Image (cartoon, rainbow, N blue to C red; front, side, top):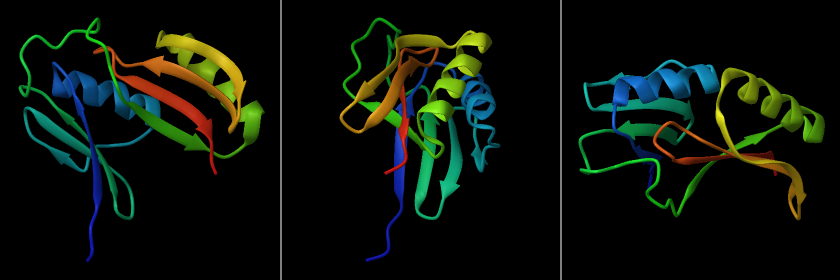
Length: 121
């Protein structure tokens, strides 16, 4: 079976969220509609932002999942990304720390969705 993995993030404003993620990840959308915008992350993987799916979505609603950006470059690169995102005003939930899998930090998008930065396996 040939399949693709699409990670869907529920947002209140798809175009605003697309600007946030596009700038953060230095990507342009591969598909745009008023309420659904997708980014091609490489063979078999997409990130989609979907608005108008849930009423009452606010940053204070508990989130039970994360998007994980796995990067090359080790601790130095993860710390550098943290500093760039912090300088842009991105909400940082947990600053850089060492975990069992390496250096990591946790941020949030404007809707409260969690974004983890961690080392590439």
